[in-house]
Length: 148
Image 1 (cartoon, rainbow, N blue to C red):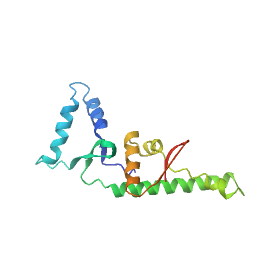
Image 2 (image 1 turned 180 degrees about the vertical axis):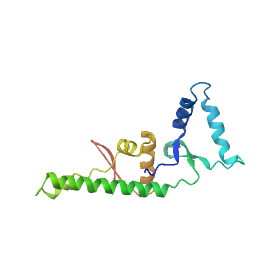
Image 3 (image 1 turned 135 degrees about the vertical axis):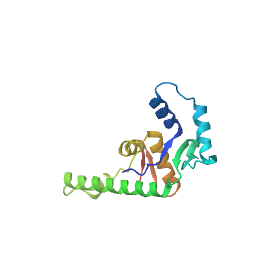
């Protein structure tokens, strides 16, 4: 299970909604108007519009919890590091500590998107939100942007 259940970027929602309709598509303005009514409506849809880092808009459940996502990300990274260390030990019996430490690569937005089955932009925003909250740190190197 991913920690992302309950949030989708507005542009992803637009694409999914119109793809499901097939014909009689809605405009981006119509979707935005409908989403703006979530919080004003008496229907208590349980959804709200959220502005994420960089200005991206997302629709999320009112029960969505950034702290829970941060904890899930920390668990994912810890599990991956343990798997990488175990694989390094198997392949490098008697190898130096430096070789084993270099096996801990963190996680990229691409890896997170694949593992949690979310869009790449959403995965990137989730990692950046967790970093801004102090749960993760980043390594921006020539080999890419990794979060630990």
